Amino acid sequence: MSKRKLTRQQAWRIEKIQKERLDRATRHKVEVEELIDSGSLGREQTGRIVARFGKQVEVVAIDRLGQPVNDPIRCHLRSCLSSLVTGDQVVFQATDATGVVTAHKPRRNVLERPDSRGIIKVMAANIDQLVIVTALEPEPQPEILDRYLVAAEVTNIPPIIVINKVDLLRESETNRNLLMGIKNLYEVIGYTVVEATTKKIGGLDELSQYLIDKSSVFIGQSGVGKSSLVKMLLPDEKIRVGYLHQQTRLGRHTTSTARLYSYKGGGSIIDSPGIRDFGLEQISRAEVEQGFIDICEFANHCRFRNCGHRQEPGCAVNDAIQKGKLSKRRLESFHRILDTMREGNA
Ligand SMILES: Nc1nc2c(ncn2[C@@H]2O[C@H](COP(=O)(O)OP(=O)(O)OP(=O)(O)O)[C@@H](O)[C@H]2O)c(=O)[nH]1
Ligand SMILES: [Mg+2]
Ligand SMILES: [Zn+2]
Image (cartoon, rainbow, N blue to C red; front, side, top):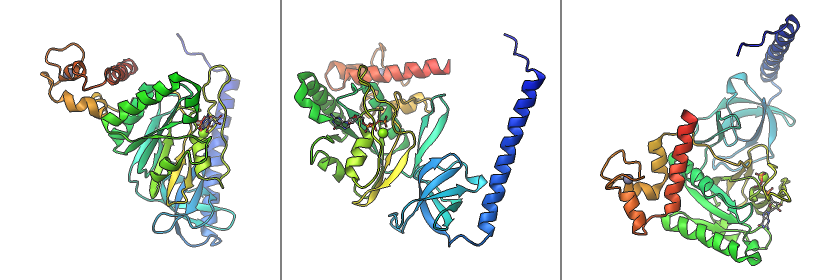
């Protein structure tokens, strides 16, 4: 198909928009540098990024132990610092009303995920733990859970699995089977699985124990109750929670930006926007295999080094499934993830 030719007027408008954009960026840069030179800003402090909003961030000053010492403050960014994300540590200078982030401290690690156009984006930095939230409603998607676990293993960030909304257990036998299915499967593999409900006092007692002194990111499908959990753990914070679609019982993508909150017991919690899927486009086949720690254990004993664990002779993975040592569902998940990667690369 031939490219549509721009009319002169269209070309002129595009040029005008680009020039305006450039002018705005230059003006912003000058204003930020003027603010720094004016001497009106306070001393340099260490802070952590609480949330990112385009060219601005919210930053909270932290002490040596990483605990907040003040309320968060909106800051401008020096133009060289465009890649900052929630959880990053920075140097900043502020007045009571505004501030400027002047330097980015080295990151310990990052959690990445593809955006809606498939472009890999860093979502949060300096994380100790992934809290993978699933729930009895919307219906759990085991394959997505497996994708999160692969991401956790590959980035070397220890995960815990939370099954939220266990108050719905009373409603049906199906829910009980769902819960036990997830719990048994993942506990056998070696993961911590925690039950939770925000609808009962004490429903988060077990979960709260795992959050002390750690920097945790809550991730999971839209509508599983990530924000509801954070809101209940931190009753003084103003946090928006959504509701499920009446018919589909899916979430409404209520949270739009990853946001960090200080946890009263020490540590911090990052609430993140829900996603319907968690692409693993950025990693290799070998990494996916490493990410399935249960499969990986047997895969080393397959006859062929490049065994696909489908119908190959001498496949130790299929043998383990026959003997009931490995879940067939996990292997199906593994194959589906590889298949989608192949489609994506085609
Ligand atoms: N029954 C029950 N419903 C819950 C529980 N926790 C949260 N919900 C409901 O689940 C719905 C979605 O909650 P949110 O906290 O907004 O979900 P989220 O995971 O933050 O969703 P996104 O921000 O869209 O990713 C709301 O209607 C909550 O009231 C629970 O323990 N039990
Ligand atoms: Mg939310
Ligand atoms: Zn094999």
